[in-house]
Image (cartoon, rainbow, N blue to C red; front, side):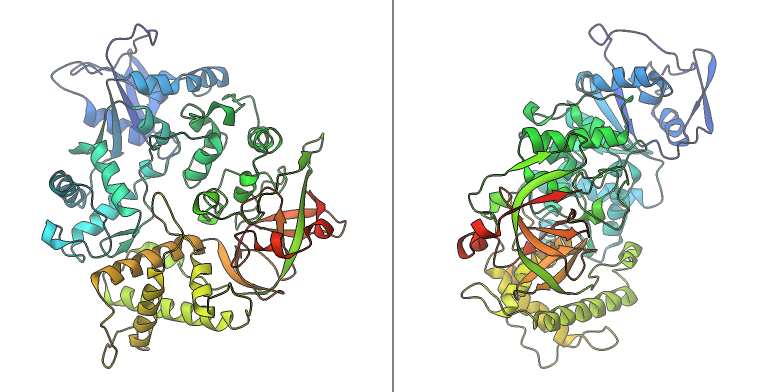
Length: 559
């Protein structure tokens, strides 16, 4: 992009290329309703790319930049396939990756101000966990300060939701984030993301923000697909293709980017490789039903990666690392039919869903970000109180609890799937019991109009440590409640099952799997996968030890 002359294309091999930068940006609308002149020829581009070129041009000197929409013929599938195959190398070799978030708004000055404050605090104190009550003694503003909302809105920009940025941010040797006239190092953004995960808050605002970059560890394709499930792509095949270049466990993959393949062929290839070749039943944790209709061309056991699966966390992916394994030391026994429609897998029916609660803990209205207003706080307090009172009443129908646990402990452990949301995660600690009591006291203090009156309520337990455990428990309950409902089984167990489960659905253990699954039997004896589940009291292989599994075992035909 020459400083005072129109842009021009330079053709070169990657090996012989001059030093260049690579642009990472969100396309925005696919309508190419802006025009640039390149090599003297008009070229249609999206508005966001036009803005990026306009802002990033250096009027004083030439700037060489690789931009996908300009350098790749997007209408030629063969060229797209070839270029996607070397995309990781393009971003890895760039002297710097420029992350363009878009035009600046009136709030961005405050957002970048607090990002720079994070940078200074981290330099002085190291990384510190950030919750709803940031430590003002370190220099953070009050939790009601409007800078926090400005930062939340910055992290809601489209770039943070795009699947291709995962590879672009991961492969870059150096990255800078640019938003209009504001900029900051990508590493500084990434550090903020790490400090938000445990408590899931930026000030008073709950967030589900993760920097779209793969940590420095070995990752297979399935793990990457799970971690990036919420990210978006215009072409559903790119949910897989965009990750191939950053897979570090090469045994986990046997597909290459090829735009001649259909979406169904791509997703089926991933499933078959994991099940038939790797014997990895973890894949089924990402399959089943959701509020988004399943692609009718895919069997229920093949995850449809084109949607976010109701943002349901995948227990199967982390259960073994947290000491859970519902199937004990059993080994998987499975096969896939020649037409790749039927998965035959051995296991056992161990229970049936007899009651379901459909309480929605976190509603769509939370997207309004009105947590700093009296009306917003009242709405949140009243829904929390109503939801947890419903949970408590619903749990009265359960009567099967692990030895040494009462109903309330079994309930809160079920709601959080007995897990923390830390990295690395662990079993829910005993301190969460105190956090649960604090929740009860908060609900006791909540009046009918949503205001809080602490008169006559003992607040001696509200120490800083207990409050932070309370926030952590509420965060992990919120995460594990997304896309799930409480259930009581015919055997009296409490469970957390996929939304869309029905009374009469079967709780099954599939041999070799770390978690149980909900299956639904059709009238012809074939089953559909509803999804993975958590059932408190069988997650450590108890059913395998207490039941006659030899007589219960059978082959399930999953369609």
